[in-house]
Image (cartoon, rainbow, N blue to C red; front, side, top):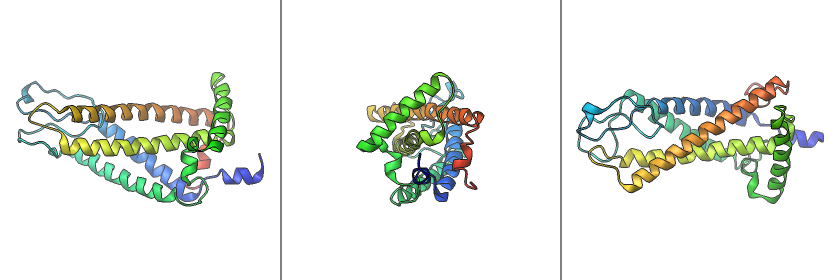
Length: 225
């Protein structure tokens, strides 16, 4: 690989800073969401118990007849403010994607949208799959398209989570059964969260393997690199 290509595949400092903050916020948000209670329908309080759920929305109702913004507990407030923080970070990332900073352009996040990107992605997947079978990954410079595609999928997942979560916040009923639309959106929300958890687990596992092989992949993305 030429020196020019290697340099082009680096990450600009704003991207490295974003990656660290975004990763921290997302993992915290997922953890908070898993601890949140599903809002209860009025009259069901006596039978309610603590449940572990996806970040669907807030805490139990206190009996107020309403469909819309649920009453906020401390846990939900944390979830809400983290969501707003992540939304702000996504706006920043979208703006960065419009620049030519190394590793920032949206073509890097979604290489499958372009013929050249699809070819590079396909070649890298074949190379990486061979390494996965023996638990010995190819050097990170031979998997740039794969890594950036994962980042792109995580960002898309965060956007879908935010949109569906906002919809549920304003349309969740605490006095009657949920409408078909609300249940459908809740299913999308839950599916995206589960998919994101699996994606993050695979991503973290790959980083661990790279580090164990001496690739020092963390140094390529950490802010102080």
